[in-house]
Amino acid sequence: MPSALVFFNELSDVPSKAQRELLTLASRFDEATLAVASEVSQEAQEVVNGYGVAKLLVASGGDDAFIDHSLSVLEAAVKLSAADVVLVANDNFNREIAARLAVRLDGAVITDATDVSADLVVTKDELAGGYSAKAKATSGTLFVTMKPNSIEDAPGGAGQAA
Image 1 (cartoon, helix red, strand yellow):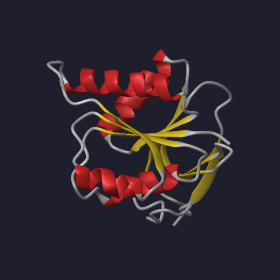
Image 2 (image 1 turned 45 degrees about the horizontal axis):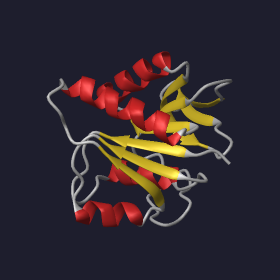
Image 3 (image 1 turned 180 degrees about the horizontal axis):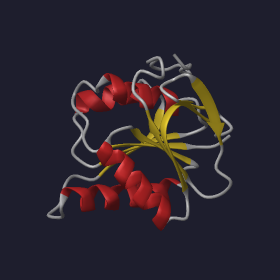
Image 4 (image 1 turned 120 degrees about the vertical axis):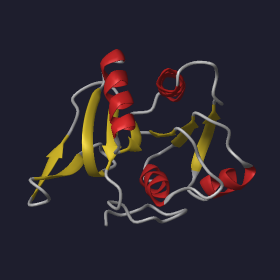
């Protein structure tokens, strides 16, 4: 079964609902790794452990520009973890870094996803949710931006699509 990497720029003591959804989705895969581009508190680490994250990679900010630091952290995490799928939030910033790294690493990017199956088939809504489409990358690391409120938050379990 494939492995997953989740990336956050920062992680507060209480992860956001969208972050918890990404962690739930990652728990479906054989091994889940979390990379964070800032410091992570002990409280946040305890929450993350409840989602079955096997590895936590932390790289606090350097003197680089914000986007440069995040790109460097995520690229290193992808190479270190050898993840098959990289899960990030569906916002402008994360879509940008996912696209850049997919190009750099000869991967694929699918945005606005609502689900990713264990065999890396991505589901996404089309035409304002009127239709649902499924897509699968044919090669390379798959970068997926996940729409919030698509996955039911389920610590320690295998989250299902909402």
